[in-house]
Length: 380
Ligand code: PLP
Image (cartoon, rainbow, N blue to C red; front, side):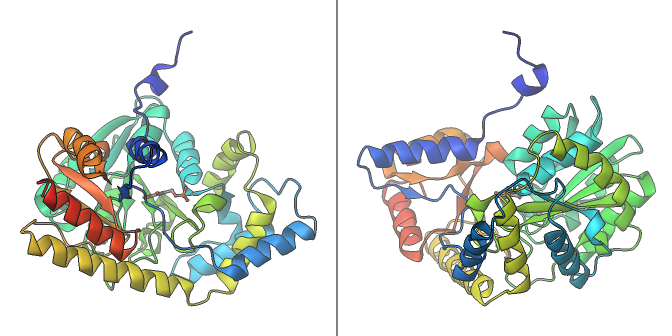
């Protein structure tokens, strides 16, 4: 069989590879501290589950409108308006997860050979999705800037040109936990406007932020028409398995991206969308409680690494931290899993070798146990 070059040049997901290996070891009876997965260790709030059950019992089990049920598109538009953006319900496509929203955006905007700019480290699926769409990638290394964007704006200005199709900005960031400043976002805006570049603003960790101001690109002057805002329910509402996300963009883009959705996944699951309305309209304290727990775990890890003289950057959002390791981060991660039974994701999967990403969406006890094991086995 002949496989498409676009697909062959994509690596399998490193995050899934590590977590599958961790699961295999666990199945064989090993006690693995799994710090690889980006999944809140909290259950979906009860009132959201109840809304899904109610919708299912009311017969909302058939196909939903392809771009999403009107009530949810409306509730999402209201949420985005509350965040200072101009979107109306017609600017929203409800998707089965933010990952699918990103996929549809790449498919809609990128032609073979178009330039897409990524800021490294970049979440694993950006590279894969851009390549599947046929993009040529240009990458900016944020390692020398402690993973911040503002000090890298000059470098970004050197690469962004009239030939650039798309720039991807993710704040709060996976895998670094960095939250980009307003000055950084203004710098992105200036470049995007000067060179007529479209920006994907991946805001999936918007609510998991330990204090700094969250800046939505689409809310900045002249950015509405050139931004695709991506968000979803997986992280802030502990709904990873429900597969519910969305993209918001000017209506012309929605018309095009809507074709990708209707000819592929059809729509997000009907009763799940009804639960999404409840999640947005009846927001309880759950998100705030989760965020507080994540912040405490971040502080715990910073203390532990400080105690062991490991120089980590200071994440301000999401639930990830980059830990400096050997140049061969893949070997480090494989060996740490085999010897110390601690699962981490090699930084090279995000375009930044020499680091591993740990996720602190695991309990404080497991985090302590993980660091202790890595220290005892001389990995730190
Ligand atoms: N964007 C980033 C930066 C992520 O980390 C993830 C999931 O890990 C996604 C998008 C996709 O989220 P979803 O579960 O909604 O598909």
